[in-house]
Length: 280
Ligand SMILES: C[S@@+](CC[C@H](N)C(=O)[O-])C[C@H]1O[C@@H](n2cnc3c(N)ncnc32)[C@H](O)[C@@H]1O
Image 1 (tube, rainbow, N blue to C red):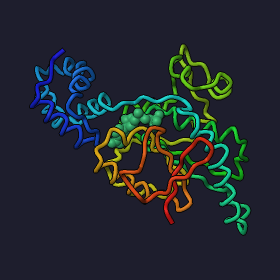
Image 2 (cartoon, helix red, strand yellow; image 1 turned 135 degrees about the horizontal axis):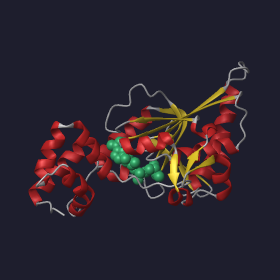
Image 3 (cartoon, rainbow, N blue to C red; image 1 turned 90 degrees about the vertical axis):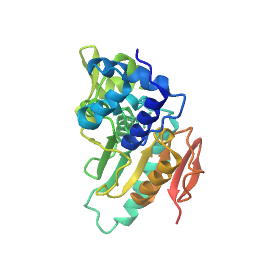
Image 4 (cartoon, helix red, strand yellow; image 1 turned 30 degrees about the vertical axis):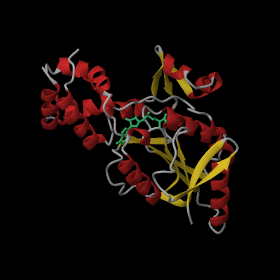
């Protein structure tokens, strides 16, 4: 494996910060070395400056670098409490509010828009889709729109395809839901169309403006902001506030906090879960 020199690390981490917002502090040299070594060999680069120059010229190499550096760790029903929160509080509350608001227009379906802002390989959004499904909402009465975005092309491709190996389905997914919502596909499992069709996926870098997204009733932005610099986190939460419905719900990772990054949201507690709503 080729070692990265201190000046190369400085240049490379600056570049990664610029293209993805991911902040690699000193001490993370091993991360670049281990994750980019296969690409270095494939592209026959003798040092990290060569790979950096190649990436600046060739967008496909840049994409491969982002795929390799971003940590895609995720699993079905991760941390469980956000999904209990959805089932017992968030979805019933939204339905309640929207039913009252649409009293005059009983024939039009109630629309609920959810966004998973760093959805990785799809386990998060399919867990949300299964949570909606388990509530047996009458499809004629509800229009559920789930959007999953991520910076990684490889992650979005897997999410879109909805195919998981036996280790992935063994993490967090109860046996009864595996049988109910997945079809065996060789030695893998593929999400059934009834769940797949509830979600849309799209590549999106959270550093870019959030134009054209519209307003969401629910936003999950979990376990991604921890990789960003404080400045970028502040910017991110400001943009999220701009696309959350005034009565909407923001859910962040269980080890994350908004305390130092934004005062636009009010933390609220329901059983074991914390969620955030816009300050009025
Ligand atoms: C650790 S995963 C979290 C997945 C899921 N939200 C969860 O909690 O299980 C973090 C994801 O953030 C994505 N990511 C990193 N930087 C990003 C950026 N600038 N814009 C969008 N997604 C990004 C990574 O590709 C990765 O899939």
